[in-house]
Image 1 (tube, rainbow, N blue to C red):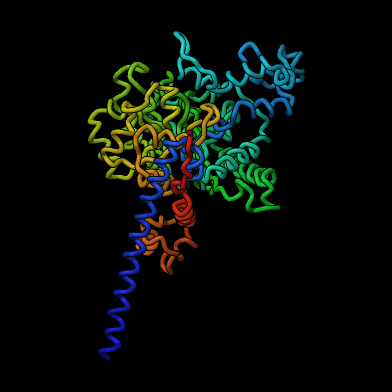
Image 2: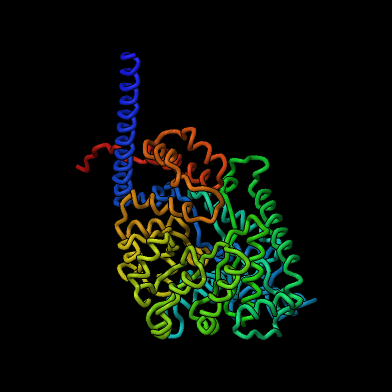
Length: 517
């Protein structure tokens, strides 16, 4: 009996000692990786080192804004779309007319002319943007969205491009904002005047022809996504080689509501999004988009929040992430900087905030930020677009405040095609601008999955998984179960495996001594 007890005691001690040693080894690897990242930054290697850095996901990514101008132009040339060089912009030919008959050039002809191609690329993106008296970064950025068009069949092409781009940056997951149904809603709701009483307005809309067509629109959204995903797989060759770049990148969609329309159309979009989230697995959340400083966006901001609140309270909770506080001093009147983030959270039920730039101007701003930290309301940080659109960078950027008050954040691209960047560039900018240690880089990357709208339990709520991660071990029985049953946990565990490989790989290289005599 005594020998048996001693065996148990010493066996337990051996496991504890081994776990401690593994933990120390894990911490040592992180320190070595951090040192190697510093070396890479000082010796011209930051881009490859950061491209290989494992990224949980990109949670704030407008699909249309993720496409580069050259790609829009290539598609236009292939699909018989026109180039209006007076803007310049891409346009569909007028009904039953050619591009020439419409008063424009075929996009293929414009692409073949070096000067026209240059002007188009600059007009469809922020490339070569220079601020002038009458033309701001804000104007240059948002103008691009009215200048691009493509055939509906290009939905799958867009998915293939962003998935492949993500894979080549070691990114596991994308939540893409996309508006799939919009034009179809205009004739159904354009003549409906709402009262401001959201309960009555909801009944009015649901009793209208729009309300009767909601199930049809939901089915259309599902079919469009399924068709696009299938085309993405064909384009990437996933059926032939499942390991091809982009095939293993998980994609979900955020129903994108354009808020710069009259109330009937905005509420109809929100109602449709609520129904889509309930019926289409790939649609995981809703967001309101378009410039937050627009006339209608400002006029109806609180009204829009109440629309969301009505559905949340009466049709059941859904995932909400909202552009809020993408404003800055001078862009709007001071009174309009005081409440957008708070109302997005307290009335709009936002689980995540996109941008959140004007947090310091909100009433009781520090209390609000502490509330966000306490309630785990994450901020989607978009450093490049914040700089381009609002001129906010460096110490002025609220990431400094959010970090200080422990508000969770993740790094995202916003519109990488328009801004001419990618997620790797955003991480590089985070690292170099704010002296972020490697451990916090991992924190930001992990947050993209922790706060994603993927279904299932998080591994960070499972003590067995946390223990396995801390010792850089394999998934134990308790952790393996959740990894097999939770979509979120599966990707989180994959991220941890990629961190392990990255930390084994990234080292300061040995250099031969050289003489320059």
